[in-house]
Amino acid sequence: AMLIWVCGCDWNDENHDEHDVDHVPPAGQGALVVDNLTDSDADVFVDGVNKGRVGDDSVRVFDLAPGVYRVVLNEDDGDRDYRADIDVLEGRLSVLEVRTVSGDFDDYSVSLHFD
Image (cartoon, rainbow, N blue to C red; front, side, top):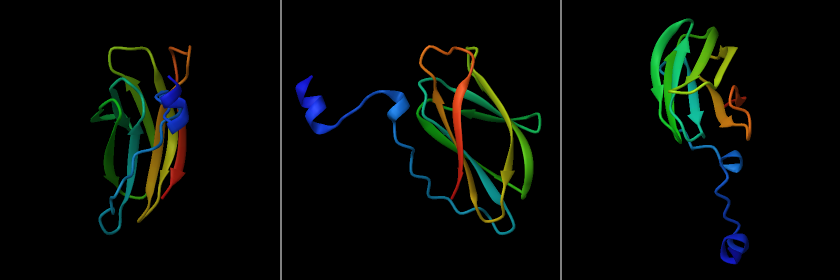
């Protein structure tokens, strides 16, 4: 245990660093990036359309026309969810970092930033 403390390792998902995403959206588009830093899969819905699943501790990128989209994340075989209106900007990445909240079985902790 002392070795883990000395090297600064932290296996707690909430302190997990984001994944590096090296993606350039196609001309005239932006991209929604779902960075799932949890230990469960999540289904991704954009404006009510299921766009697929993002696996645990992985990233999915969805190229979209610029605009505002209703994004919903539903935990696979679970109760956690998230929903918000997200801006997708031309030539930029709209990155959702998805984490779990300790002791909260109904919601994800999601932060948004633009790259």
